[in-house]
Image (cartoon, rainbow, N blue to C red):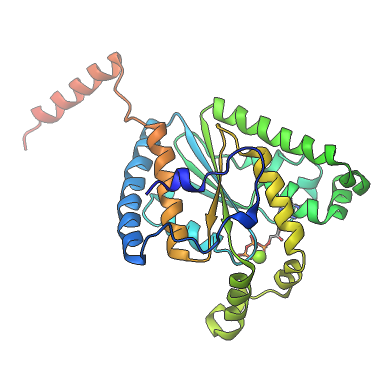
Length: 289
Ligand code: ATP
Ligand code: MG
């Protein structure tokens, strides 16, 4: 199954209403489990090579409305990876220090080192999503909220984001962006589940239900942001999120696709290193067992 091609957002116009959040890619749950198992094993192998190579990195951005399953998907996809090679950063409401800098600053600081996979749980995109839906947040950045009425203001932010991502791509960080597309009905069901099941209650938030009132405004902001910033170097994927099993399978497969394209290699010892290794091996062999 070509999840990469199926869910990639083409640059230009995007209409979320044309996408089915309950899509199953014609797979059964069992088919998906088989594919996922294979891909998670492959992911572990590719991660080891990326880490050994220590020359490049992969940045995976997760964006979604509440209860789409970001946390669970991140946990699941990373389950087979070596923790030392992964850095997860959750971006919440920016701090005073963060707001005292340009809007990409805190994301720059959180980028994965060479050899690592970086996960952004929310990201710089919040600056064109939640901030677009609630322009009064701009005041905290010393920007006049009235500027939000000017289309050009947002276009400039999309441009800044794309330029930054191109810079990262040219310098060895591959950027892959995943929008987990949950339906309004499924979000409602998941919120209600949280209240009804004692061990999920801690996840319930009245604030999330308040944000849900802005559903249409968020969808519009997502449509524009994704269409404007899905590029060859840093593509977006809109992943159906109503079936968690499908979502996790698609995410694993898309990450495998990108790591395979990067094709990380175990480093070869250099000329001097080879000699030092031969000497060390000779020394070990000469020791009495
Ligand atoms: P969970 O609820 O599963 O723990 P979460 O990602 O929803 O995960 P929260 O602490 O509930 O975490 O929410 C983070 C909040 O921070 C979100 O409402 C998000 O919109 C907000 N946020 C993130 N980045 C920014 C930003 N740059 N400006 C303003 N608000 C932001
Ligand atoms: Mg939350």
